[in-house]
Length: 319
Image 1 (cartoon, rainbow, N blue to C red):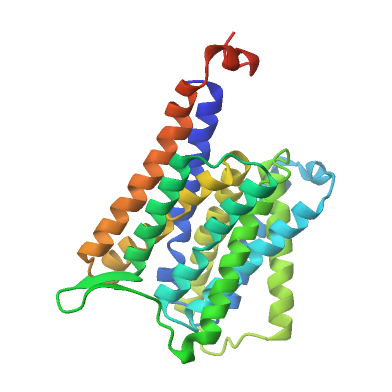
Image 2 (cartoon, rainbow, N blue to C red):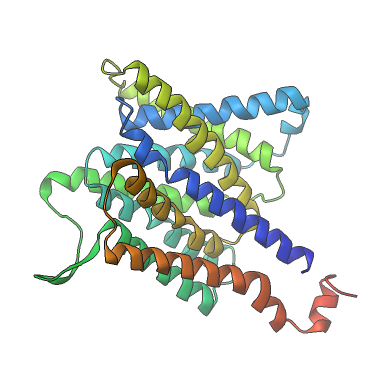
C-alpha cells in the first residue's frame, strides 16, 4: 500500500473515531441538568484546556505563530455554532428532527467543496453518500415502517417545533460550513488548528451565553460530574480527531463516515436506556456501514488501480 493510501486510512480511522465519540453526547446530555448551549461551551472549553496542556508540556507555544487567514477564524466559529445550535435544538424539537437537520451539513460541504475547491465527486462517492443518508433517515425514524400504515416518510412539522427545527437547520448549515472551511489551510499542523478551533469556538459560544445567560440552578453533583466526562470525551476527543480527519480527507469522504455517529447514538440508547432496535433501524445501520466501507475501499484501493503506472510515476508514488 502506497503512502497516500495509508494517509487516507488514517483519515478514515480518525473520522470514524471522532464520529463515534460525538455519538455519545445525546446519552450524556440526559444526565446533565443544564441548557444545551452551556454543555456545548464546556465541550469546546475542555478542548481548549486539553490543547493548552499539550502545548505547555511539549513547550510548543511558538508553533502557534502561523499566517492567520479567515479560514482559521471561521472554522472555530462554525465549530462552536454547530455544537451549540445542535444541542439547543434537541431541547426545542424532536430528536429525529434535530438529528436529520444537522446531518444535512455533510451534504452541503460536499457540494461546496466540489464547486469551489474542485474536489473530486465520483459516482462511488455519490452512491456512498446516498446510502449513508438514507441509512441515517432510517435510524433516526424519518423513514419508518409498520404493518398498519406501511412505509412512513416525513418530519414532524408540528408548529410548536418550528423554532427548534430552524435552529437544527442552522446547526446543519454550520456543520457543513465547518467541514468546508476546514478543507482550507490543510498545511497547518493538527494541534495548532485544533487550538485555534477551540479558542474561537468558546469565544463564539461565550458571546451567546452573555446575551442569554444559562440557568444552572438545577445542576446536581451528578450533573457536573457527567458534564466533565462528556466535555472531555465528546468535546476534546471528538473535535480533535475531527480536525485531524478534515486535514486528510476530501469533503465527500468526510461526509460518508460522519454518519457513523447515528449508529453509536443508537447503540448507546440500546445499552444504557434499553431502547429497542427496529428492523428499519438495523437496515439503516447496515446502509451506513456499507456506504462508508465502499468509500474507504474506493479511496484506498480501487482508485489506485485505475491510475496508470506512468501517472503514478509522475506523482512520485512509484519510480
